[in-house]
Length: 114
Ligand SMILES: Nc1ncnc2c1ncn2[C@@H]1O[C@H](COP(=O)(O)OP(=O)(O)OP(=O)(O)O)[C@@H](O)[C@H]1O
Ligand SMILES: [Mg+2]
Image: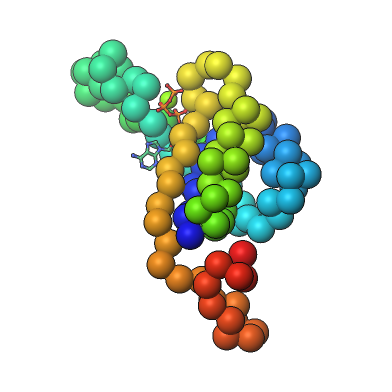
């Protein structure tokens, strides 16, 4: 099992969610978050320190999706094609290995609950 964490633009949230749902990937947890990336690391950090600016934490949306190994690339593709605007700040996707999944009501475990 994999966990896909995608941090995307708020403006792309609806289209990404709907595209996933249409392809049958309905299980997800969505959170409004704030975050900072590394785009500005080289050109900006010195200026930030010099002028006493704070690095901005920008509003983003985080999708958390647990899935079978075989579905991971499909889900990543759907997210990428719908979250991409080709400008800085489109977000990032992180993929983690998952050890176990448990449905609380039944005690059922493993990929079958996904
Ligand atoms: N190392 C990290 N750990 C956790 N979250 C991160 C990390 N790096 C980036 N993020 C999250 O991802 C978002 C970065 O999105 P962003 O699109 O700015 O990435 P980027 O790598 O700077 O790409 P771009 O050049 O397109 O801006 C941040 O707002 C933050 O929420
Ligand atoms: Mg960035």
